[in-house]
Length: 118
Image (tube, rainbow, N blue to C red; front, side, top):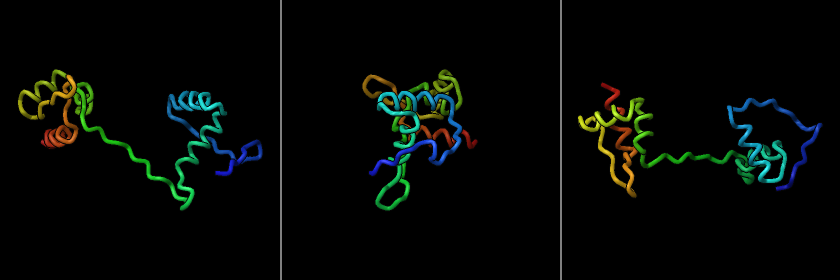
């Protein structure tokens, strides 16, 4: 891609960032050896398909499994309440994977939706 220089005469756009985002941008810019502005521009340019001039679809990968803490948080209950729901058969039990107890995300989500629909 041809490099477009930015400077005082360039278009400007005030931008509000979520808390902590500025620090992430600063760290990435420092690691890349460029300014924060150049980092933001580079990352924006990377999200556009140059051939068709349309945004590239950004896909968030859905987790396959949830640990106990994340499962309880997702449901909005304590870990002990989650244990009770599992014991009552209202939530499927976790599986053992690599020595960790993991709830299968799709199975958990389905049971949670049914539980909350009651």
